[in-house]
Amino acid sequence: MTTDALWKLCGVEACQNAAESRGWCPKHYWRWKKYGDPDASVRVYSTAAPALGARRCTVSGCERPRRTKEWCGTHYARWRKEGDVSGERRIRERYDSNVCRSPVCDRPRRNKGLCLAHYQRFKKHGEVALVTPITVAVPPAVRGCDVEGCTRPHQARGYCGGHYLRFRATGDPGGAEFQAKTKQTGWCHAPGCTDPARAKNMCAAHYRRLAMGQPLVEKKKYAPAGAGYVNGGGYRVIRVNGRSVMEHRYVVQELLGRPLLATETVHHVNGVKTDNRTDGPFIEDEQGRWRSGNLELWSHAHPYGQEIGPKSDWARGWLAAYGSPQEQVAYAGFADRLLQVETEASSNLGCGEEKQSEGGNSRVSSTTLGNRGRAISDALARGGADR
Image (cartoon, rainbow, N blue to C red; front, side, top):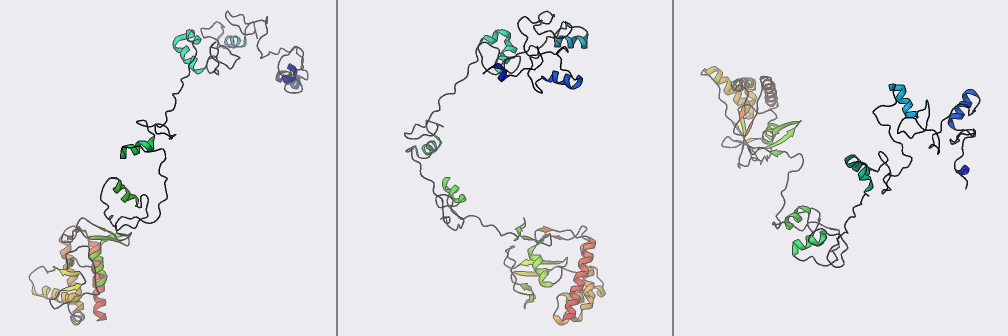
């Protein structure tokens, strides 16, 4: 195969550039488009390497072909910019090969005609480092497991990872065959556990206990979602309409149909603060106690002052709230007197009421007290009307 078949030259005589359009090189084609004549009388420079005997740049030490004003293209551009072609800056050398210029290296060229390794040596030691070949580190042979028949790579003490773990656990690495992993089915065999089995017929938690030598005790049971939590005082707290309330107070308020007074507290009969069971509405027993299940309503209210009239009105309001059905109907009009005393007692506390006996603190503003008083008054009035 001839050279013309591989590299077609420009159709203009004496032009050695490659042809691209209409049989001409890009520069002659541009001349033809602009002037209508690709004549080679217009000086066109070749980008190929200068032939033997061609004129070279007149600058001392420059081997580049001459382009303009007896200089190469680079020195001519320096003359136009700086007015002098003998500047201190060195003209960058041009390398036609893509291989490292070191005589002992065939790696690809990166910087200054050198591969990356020789370029680093050249910066540190100069041209002397270019005659030393670059040695390639040969990785050591991969060591295998010492157990006969095991093809896994070595990890520690001559064993692979699996045999090493077996050696640490039992003192014997065993044979090359590992126990096949089987998918666990069924439920955990630990007492009281209903979780699916993960390993050795146990759930993940009990399997960890078995591996650490701990007893297989029953796991802790957690309350279902929405069941609330137990606060620092031992009372259960639940969420109602986006607010946290203590469950025993909320249950009593639902039974009474009204908010609790500031002087009312809820007592647990059996002493278990999380036992908030009820068995219907409050019933007054023969000892005068208001109970429903394990909850009992207590009151520590008393009026202020020594005048007989206000105390009598407060006593009638007390009967409207806690008396028999007949007394509640008879004295329903005095319920606001009881609320007035309750509001004054709460206001005297400063920031609100403090439930010390129930393990929690709640601060009630005057606006909240007024709203609660109106709600209690309406509930008592409705209760008296119904009776």
